[in-house]
Image (cartoon, rainbow, N blue to C red; front, side):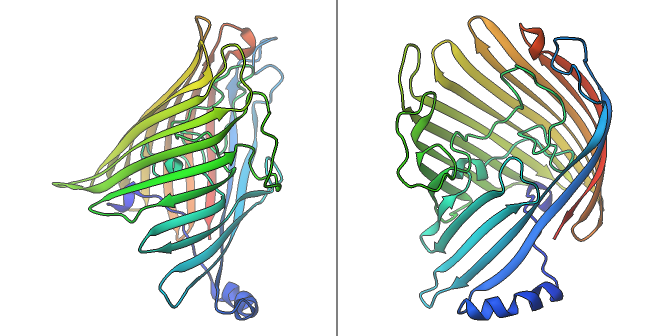
Length: 360
């Protein structure tokens, strides 16, 4: 798999960080400790519909958006060869969640088991459109600057994921001949509320969530290939007219050749309600030349209900420059179009963005 098709977080520890962590490491009886994370900041300016009653009414036309996290990592390898570790991710901001994810893991010949607050296996296995701008990809962007109003699409996403960061058990098999399977079980879809035993009578909530999937990574001739598929099912806690269990399924892939990567993905969600369903898909391409990466992507999302649709069309092009290890500059343009039967769910926006992401 070429480096262009895989975008792991860069984990760089400096000598000063190592010195600060030396004493806790010794006290932890052999655990190796690392500190990592990122800081992202973008200047955003443009225009969106501001007519009275529409989604963008009353919103500013420029501003600064930022996001950051610090990862606290600790792991060790036991005499039997099994690796044990902890990952706690602290948000740099208090919105929406102070601790993003927090889990322990066990890894060995059996694969990898994760216990705690983390996205499901199907989320980690996805291949789809490349990301034009850090944190601003068309597929579930971490930063989204356009008002959706009452539009039910919100942002487009093709991850098979209805449990998000709720406490769960996840297992990934070892990768064999390029294939890997994974599955997650989430008892209660209420994120990390602390208590192990939670109410099982919450309206509109699903529990007993099972999410399973797999992917294949390999080479076909001169091409790097990655494909995935996933399925999720959750039981409705409180039934009612037109309400039932919820199902999601999706698939996607990427194809890489030298510095060129193209990718696409699709997801269907029945939303657990009669007469209501959702579809999302995206496609895009990127080209990397030395320290430069040029990428463009498009996403479409729609929620169908009672013969009407809420829709989102999201276009994006971005140019990224790797200034040095862990330091990236980026700029680009977004076109976002929300449509709905209600004026409060309509909006059209054209934005320019320029900023940086620092990974450490």
